[in-house]
Length: 191
Image 1 (tube, rainbow, N blue to C red):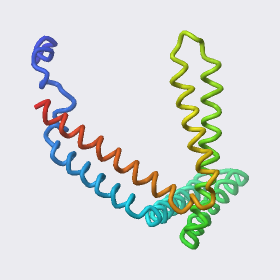
Image 2 (cartoon, helix red, strand yellow):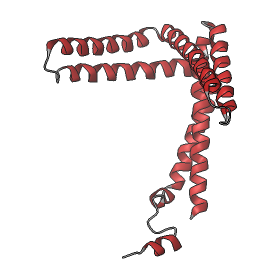
Image 3 (cartoon, rainbow, N blue to C red):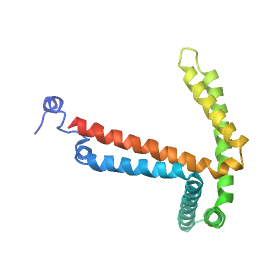
Image 4 (cartoon, helix red, strand yellow):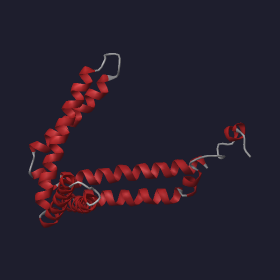
C-alpha cells in the first residue's frame, strides 16, 4: 500500500503516463508516419484535396446510415420521417462526393471560406467587447488572421478549391506528426 508521500517522492508511482512511456517508440513512429503523409499531401495538394473530399463522403454515408438506423428507434411517425429523411440526405450527399469530388471540393471550400470569414468577424467583435484589462488583443489578432484567411480563400474561389483542402490536410498532418514526435521524445526523457 502506498501513501501520498510515497507517490510525491516517486513520480513513477501512480503515474498516468507510465503506459505511454512504454510505448514512446510507437508514438514517435506514428508521428513519423503523419509527417511523411503530410509531406506527400503537400507534394500533390490536388490529389490530397480529392482524397480529403472522398473521406468526407465516406463519413457522410456512415453518418447517414446511422441516422436512418436511429430513426427506427423513434416511436412517433413525424420524428421518424424527419430523422430518416435527414439520414437519406446524408447518404445521397456522400454518394455525390464520390460521383463528382471536384464539385464537392468547390462547395466545401466555399463553406470553409465563408465559415472562416464569419468566425473571424465574431472573434473581432468579441475582442472589442472584452474588458480592456484582459488580453483582448490576442483574440482580436486571432480574429483578423482568421478573417484574412477566409477572404483569401474566397477571393480565389473556385480556383482555390483545387488546392486549399489538400493544403490544409498536409499542414494538419505535419503539425500533428510533429506533436506526436515531440510527445514521444518527451515521454522518453521522462523515463
